[in-house]
Amino acid sequence: MEVCALLSKPSRRETEINAKWLGFEIPDRFVVGYGIDYAQRNRNLPHIGAVRFTEEN
Image (tube, rainbow, N blue to C red; front, side):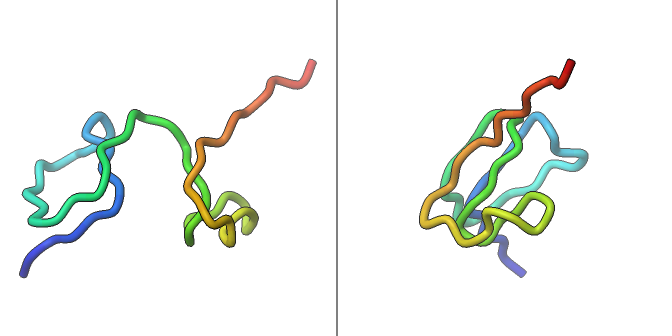
């Protein structure tokens, strides 16, 4: 079996993997778009973007 990953977050990995094909290495941020969602939203974005959470006071 060979692994293909669009995004890689090395800081979150519990086990090392060797992906034969790797798109992008990203920092530990929550991302959405291009099929990745947050609370069933933003899955249909034509790009991948980081979610910015704001604190409610």
